Length: 396
Ligand SMILES: Cc1cc2nc3c(=O)[nH]c(=O)nc-3n(C[C@H](O)[C@H](O)[C@H](O)COP(=O)(O)OP(=O)(O)OC[C@H]3O[C@@H](n4cnc5c(N)ncnc54)[C@H](O)[C@@H]3O)c2cc1C
Image (tube, rainbow, N blue to C red; front, side, top):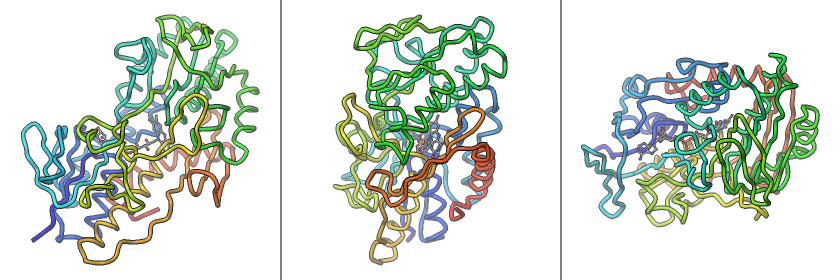
């Protein structure tokens, strides 16, 4: 009888695991993807949506159209809870029994970390979901009619540092293009101990390159700082500094999602071994942002380790291979520590970063910038969507 595999989440982690398992095991498995969203969103392009450089239809794919042709079932519901002892997942209308469970539920965004924070109950914009990016674009359009100071950054406890960098550089580029730059003081506020730390202890000469880039663009930088609160007009830092804004975009800290919180650490992230298997439950795996990964060093203001799309896809492939080995009665594969390749948009240029493994000491540690990396990032977006549409996750 076919083994039942339930995968929670239909994004980078969930889809890659689903396609890889189907490819490796065919009819030996019945795979069900459970996702509260009905579409895959290419999240790395959300800063471009916020700038009006992409439309939602450019970067989304309906999940049923992607999964069903591959013989993978799709349930468009939120998983409400998991009972690891009876191997069951509960949604609002269904109870799903599994032989293997893969948790790829990504993060919950913790805006409650700071008073006045976030687009829904606070005064700051965010670009971490499609809805937030679209809202941020509306705020941007209003801002352009009556410009003033902009503050961009990451509060204490953030792990996903890239998007605020991208947004700050994109805003600076667009303001120059519109001949409005002289009307807009831009401040970049971050909990990182220095610019270019990125939550990974820096990468090659990232500190120097990023410091130069911010200086060249005359973006004021405040590092190693925590935010006390946001008001409708200003960011108040813990040291008493007040920075006024007309528009503020800040990254939030993350936790695991509610449905799997009880299977995780104190922040709800899932503890796994080197094959992405849950440390306490043999038939539960986790990949991507849902995984617990310790930061490389303790920073004066708390920061976390980013788990990027590239890392997520690597984890998903390794988890799928491990589950396949289990089902075929083979020894688990040897898994290398996860690495990262990432292209950070910088508005009028871009930076390519390679870290292998992600945290120091590293075998490979590179950061290079140039306009051709921006073209590569745009090409990669198209290629990745093409690949996911066809379920060809075995391609690089
Ligand atoms: C703005 C931004 C830009 C980024 N840019 C880059 C980049 O350039 N390069 C890069 O490598 N990485 C980038 N990243 C990181 C990358 O997007 C993440 O690493 C990746 O999305 C993680 O994939 P995931 O599958 O773990 O989680 P997610 O993509 O967060 O997906 C989780 C899925 O699970 C669903 N879900 C959650 N809870 C439940 C539940 N209870 N039941 C059912 N479904 C549930 C969610 O709705 C979602 O569909 C960026 C991130 C952001 C926010």
